[in-house]
Length: 376
Length: 120
Image (tube, rainbow over all chains, first blue to last red; front, side):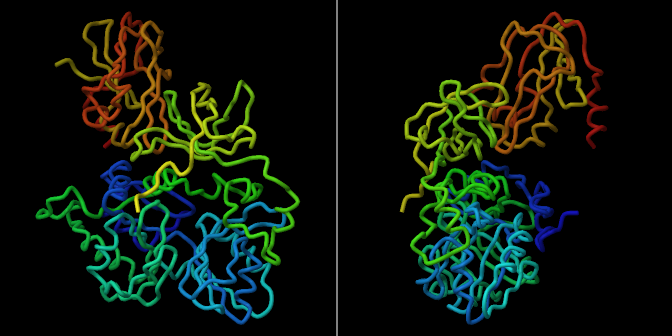
């Protein structure tokens, strides 16, 4: 039985097409459709309900020590209010999950985890706690909204004082008053655009959803832009479909696709978030013993006719060299793209490959990641 | 205008005479599928069989098979759809996929009224 986020009724009211995802009933898209939602985020702004994400707190004298043991990135020199991305590995160096570490203080960290991995992660973390630390799974108490796109700041500034908002990418502020709602606001996201993620109490979620859409000139009553607005849209609700195409264009990995319990972070191009110089962390020995990665994550530009999805075999000269991990038609680029894990020797840019799409071989080329990068 | 007949798998057939028909997908189907971005069609001269897959359509999210409501030979394909699959979303009844001739058999097809009741 799937659970509903506190915004479920808002999604139904906004004509969201509801699907089960990671144990929740969430909108894959609204009436606007994936392409419009995707383009809204690239050109203006989109609002996502990401309340399914899990949140845990690590608190106490040894909080930092625990974070350092659990994750592969180095959180030792973080400032209060900083966010850091990191994989969390098992002993063999496979990825248990990838997550965001929020440092409230060296003695208090908020960790945001994938919904699909929540119970696995909680069990894993609790089993590996050391010293004086209090671990709490607060996922069920928190709702999360992602406001993404170049006009996010303008929209949010209608509801709060600009100087209360986080400025730097991957930083956050606590106790931000957004139209009277107390939020933790981070400058983070999963779309490749500027934007914010807002965490609030469940009881405030509906109001936050409504005031944000209203500030973005979206008419909640009629599921349309407000009649006096000249532009096509300013802010629209966006579903899981657009979330996936946006992150794929930005080449952001998704757990269960580009990584899993068997794949090491180095093998999937996340070496930037693995600090082997760190004294110790779970999985360090496993990663080291694997040696130089024999596979690599690559971007594929599909040049033949067709759309490669996940789990399509990738060939060079009739020899399978890997498998796609994600793939779709990308709205902003207007063409099909995919990510794949392939043998390192065939991972060079410009390598010509074939992808088997339901029995049909279509041509593709290894290209630079990300597929899309916002202009700064 | 010739009437549209529907299969339970959401394709339509519009006969221009007893053995020739155009085939497409219903408006209900395109709404369910969402924004379409790719269409895969057979070639002229290929045989299609009632109830069997003859091509597919892909939305951003997923691929779906398209089944032929009739048995016959492909007389023409709508090449415009190959470059502009979004035409299916804008008008599913204008956006025919294939034209089939020498039709010898057909699925159990529903009238528009029956089809709409099925999806109501």
